[in-house]
Amino acid sequence: MMFDGFDTRRIVVDGVDVPVRTAGSGPPVLLLHGFPQTHTAWHQVAPALSGEFTVVVPDLPGYGASRGLEPTAEKFAKRNLARLMVGLMDTLGHGRFALAGHDRGARIGYRLALDHPGRITRFAPIDILPTLEVWEAMNWQAALGSYHWLLLAQPAPLPENLVGADGPGYVRHLIDRWAGHHDRLDPTAVAAYARAFADPAVVAAACADYRAGATLDVEHDRVDRDAGRKIDCPVLLIWARRYLKERGRRHLDVWRSWAEDVRELPLDCGHFVAEEAAQDCAAALLSFFSEEYHAR
Amino acid sequence: MIWFDGFAVRDITTSGSVVRVRVGGVGPPVLLLHGHPETHLMWRHLAPELAQRFTVVAADLRGYGESGKPPTTADHAPYSKRSMALDMAEVMTALGQDRFAVVGHDRGGRVAHRLARDHRNRVAKLAVLDICPTLDMYECTDMAFARAYYHWFFLIQPYDLPERMIGADPAYYLRSKLASSAGSDVFPVEVVAEYLRHYARPETIHAICEDYRASAGIDLEHDRADRGRLLDVPILALWGAKGVVGRTFDVLDVWRRYTTEEVSGAPLPCGHFLPEEAPEATLAALMPFLET
Image (cartoon, rainbow over all chains, first blue to last red; front, side, top):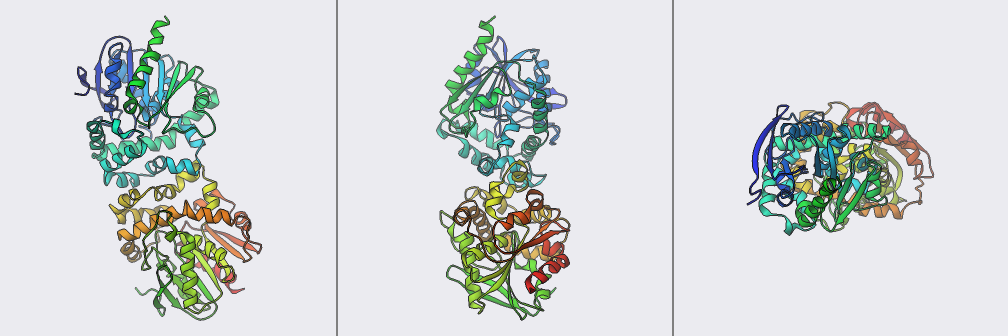
């Protein structure tokens, strides 16, 4: 059974209903999943971390079983989602915490690190580059590969209708396309991801998330970069060799313009790192997050 | 509502397909090629006016409207602009027209451009409406262009993702495409119904996706092979003042790199669908170009 021994709770943060799994004891770790998934993406990594850490695994606002966030770009700006995640951790009594985020969850993670300095002890973004960097590198090959960034950010209700015609089918399409080792994805988990997108509310949330990613998030990134603001905690970039291809500039160098202390771990898998390379991913996070405490 | 009053309807068999044309008027020949998501019906305002001075041939492109939708291949060659242009060269031959002017909008503009390059002695003049050449458009892609032209990247996704997503509700997709690209609401109910009659067919949606897939692959290969080989025909480029093309490019400057002859043109006060949104202005620009 997935998340065996975890507590399942629903926490209301600023009117948004956030289902969250928690387990373990020790320093807190927040795990944020990506698109088009749910908290279930951490079903292997979370138990592995719970031996040493207090693990907190929410559905992102609007995704999975989370409801109550109006699907607008303002509400789904990573700035607002990061604020909600801080509120979640406050409610659970965690002032400072480590954070690993995959995909959209990693975008919330770096925004949280920039907007709330001192709250994150260590940050592990998985398989992304900062939003502004992605847009600035957009050429036609990139646009072809990331066409969902363009489609989902179109004005409502175009993508809502196109994706919503068969939300679960769309999720399966993306997973087929982005996975490197499809056989390492648990069919029960994939079914859960697909099922979530049968609800138009989740489709609308994802579209709002990407609309923010094409507008407000870009502007917020630009303001930080122009101001020379950087992430003030150690960063471990874990990236998938079969997904986040290096064309020209190295990913590590890109991230080094956003944080002082960055190291990297490329893994031989597709985009769903926490599931396709669960053991390597969990081991890397355990070691990275533990350093904080061993160093004291 | 009678469209193309006095025009004859013909279905002309080419080496690769069957092409539906409307033919009317007398005078020097002018071939009119429509774009996406439309059919030759988009020329309903202009064709009767042009027919007073010219022999007007308004065709449905391969894959669109009543024209044939031959099976595709892995390299999308049946929907390459080269194949679609060859259709048109053969149509004009069948109509007894050796040398003619071509006016193309949107996808039809790309076919017209390829027609002029592949059949140099056949095309006397080229008018392109609201496009820059495909290669320039892809090569200039940045954040702003990618967001504005998202459908270029959506429609070329592997079979059959876009086919399924559009096919779930073709009427919705067609209407949103017309509305989002137009500068104003200029599509009467009966016109939309006629466009939809074709757009609602799964084979049309598939052919359209293949047209776009070809443009991101085989068409670019053909375009690259022709780089530096200039046309020797005058080009008239018109574009919508409210549209993406004029915002992204110095349109006349781009087209000047494709011909040794004169390039003229201007933005018209409308969005993407010039002949329907601003028929009088479009006609006023086309007439002197075609007559001289």
